Length: 547
Image (cartoon, rainbow, N blue to C red; front, side, top):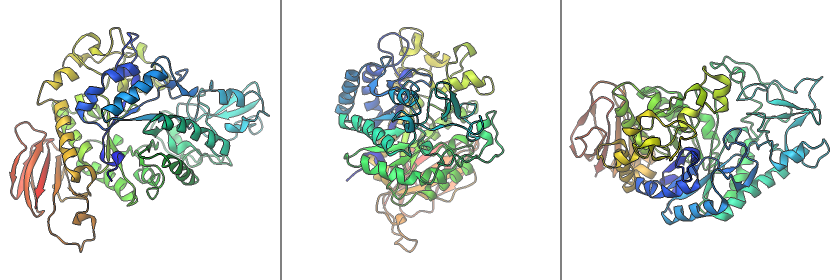
């Protein structure tokens, strides 16, 4: 039986920036509903919504005050139920952003916990009296300062890995686990198809609160000067995730994908470890490629390490952009070559082994926004500008049309629309057969029609320097077996990506009759391939073997 979260494609929506339906400059659930046909036509199988729950918005929804209520800025519970029904009617599943490492300081659980040292919910959060008037450990917060905040009313410190408005839950407490599982079940019972789990590797902290050792960091944050061995990635996490997986699997066809936060330059083995033997997270993001330059050898090494670390019963996930990191098209930009790199990156994203996640606007080439200082709203940007401008640039409004406000809203949006929206927009690209949007639709269609690309094996192919090449054989093919298996060719696809600015000749020694089915360069693609191919600068090609 096909598994949708393995074979499908997920599209991430940042709701504030996707589509405004009521003219307040902020995207909302009815706006998402109005764009479901666009997503169906694009060919995605599921959408992941960044947080839409009730929140004071200290971190734009990643500080939740009620897990069972929709924040009024996005709509109502009735609106969400309609979104779920409309999406399912189009064959699109819906994933919610589960922010369960911490809550808002205004969540009823924390208000109770903070009311007195003897409150029954006191142990639902991480409280400590400190040591001789000082915090109990040297742990630093991701968003600056120490993780320990002195609470005047009770005289103790509480822990927050991020903002002080985001107190961390105590996942060592069985009552907390039961309560959080109950919040998840509320949405699963409603028909939600799964959760993206925010900073999942932070759930458990060292019970002894031991100090983190120091290390050499590259950022202005004190957080980056510590090795985070005691405030995240605790070995006890694996038992907790198996417990979570057991609960999730009582609901047929549901899934989890975890955000595994790591430090630069990445740790693909760590991300892979959270999949267990296919019995922990269903999927786990690895962000190593987010720090890699446009270089074939660097990509090959990062992806190879990730794949090597994954248990044979587990499954990878591929993503190049999200709401926390600068957009891939800008990370890989190189003047006039930028558009070709974006096209080649699309081929990689959709043909590598694993479940692809597309960040909204990635399919049209939405660029990193340039946000004036007076318009910065992200707490990271507010605190660290200009060294770190924050995450607003990757969250600018979706560009639907070339009209004022890009068809996103009828008023000035919460973040400024990119200036290139008259040229880069979904409406214009949908009418251009050579646009990036048309390319995404074509590759998605090719992927959907070929089991080798959505569920097949992966094997690197020999290639010249600067080229990343790999073979995707159909499920059950010989390349999944031992080296002694039969060399008889089977139906499969080979992918070649040229990361260089020069033409490169590549040989093709794999047996079988090969033909080109797609190229990122207009005018190339279909046709029989003999001994090899010539790749143009930043060109990606998909070949198919017919044994």
